[in-house]
Image (cartoon, rainbow, N blue to C red; front, side):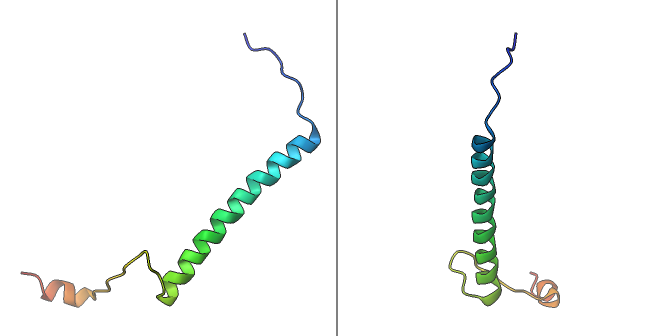
Length: 61
């Protein structure tokens, strides 16, 4: 049977919460940086081939 645990102190709770928030901050920053590089065309990790709708159906074999 589960036994009741001791209460976590406020300072420990705040520390864990701050770490959790900072992880989200770094992930968001990385995503924003990737989106920025894609929009400017400076991305070295993604290749975007733009094919127009008309060309897609006319070049079909």
